Image (tube, rainbow, N blue to C red; front, side, top):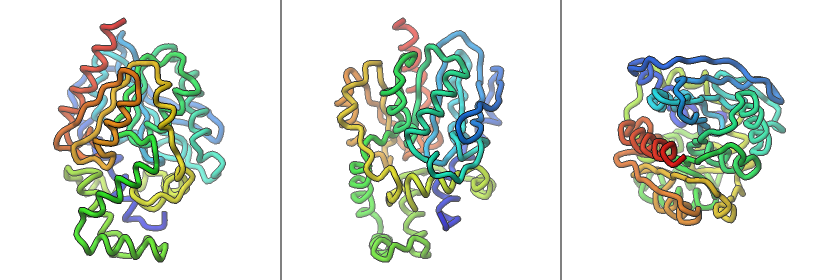
Length: 318
């Protein structure tokens, strides 16, 4: 994207939880490194060495990084929790080759990560774009996945944009007009459009306050080219290769226990997430109150309790 403000606000959240992590009281061990994949190296970190089933995390974006998932480190007191930065963002290799910026390539890169880490049984967690990557990976490589967690999922770009349109209608009229004018002119760099983005994101992306240092640092970790090529200029305007993404018909194929979550004010609207839940055999839905899309920051206590309870239930079912 050409506009830095979009980058800094949209996925400036990538560092939002780094400060939470620094204050986290845990004695779990950590190890990190890089994994060679087509196009470069993927960074990973494993927190915790407990004997419970590992949890592999897929961050959102596309083009974000695992920084904003740091609050989930809390879950590593009794199991390994694995963070990765997908290719093109975070601490992984930056890329300009657009042939690498596809869901299919991300699936194959994730398979290389799973093989390298020798994950023969694990739980798979995805947030936002990470749920798209997660379901596509599961559909091709289901072996070893014991359960799925889809947080603020996106399984249909059409449903996502319809939901976004309905949320835009709740913005002040000046912002609605700015968005319509930008769409007509295909110009997404105007001041009025950025103000509209700010209003939308504060309501539905992240409601908790963010420190200035986190915002200023976000550009270091956000894969701007990946986001622009695969998604578009903003959370509610899709122009990239995910424009026609749809896995609705594939949801009934999921055969493992599945948890879906959404924030009360999430841009992944709770009613849509409930609909997805109804299509997955035996799946459960949990609403995170007082939270938008970044539930792990807006309501970390409830978010992590829901995840821990589900994981512990999965452990006890073995």
